[in-house]
Each structure stands twice: as structure tokens, then as C-alpha cells.
Length: 97
Image 1: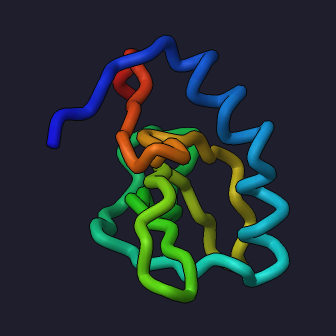
Image 2 (image 1 turned 180 degrees about the vertical axis):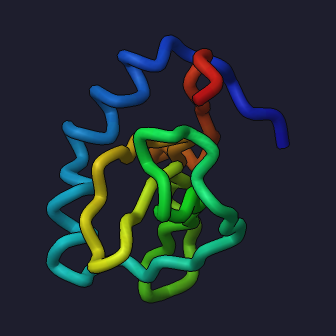
């Protein structure tokens, strides 16, 4: 399956329109950390750089995001990497973060 590349701003708009942050906060989506390493940016020293898959309770992959989590749970940086559209095709942003 191919993934279409769209402008990052359009990906972020889709993410917002579909209330992904609200769904995450409510616990409606499962989170699977697929990658974790020390944050390389000195502004986030001590934090972890994570790639997180968001899944429905039924196991459908909704989207993937990159996030920096600091000790204590603060999240100073988070943005979507890809998203599954209603037709089950996938899109990703055009900007590497």
C-alpha cells in the first residue's frame, strides 16, 4: 500500500478535524510506542523522543506521531507523522521532523 505525501499543514488540519488529540486524552485510542531514544535537541535534554502508533480498540492503525516526553510527563513537542483516511488510504506530511 502506498502512502500519499501531503503538506504538513494539511496533515495537521486532518488530525485536528478528526479530534485525534481529544481522543488520545480521553483514552479512546491505544498508544503503541514503536521507537524511543534520548532526545537529541539540547532544548529537550533529559527527554525521550518517541514514535507512537495510535490504534482503535479494534486494532485499526489511525495514525502515527512524533513526540518528546520529559521526565514527569510534560510534552513540549508533538506532531503527526501519518494518518489513515476514511477510505483506509494513508497520508503523511511532507516535512521531516
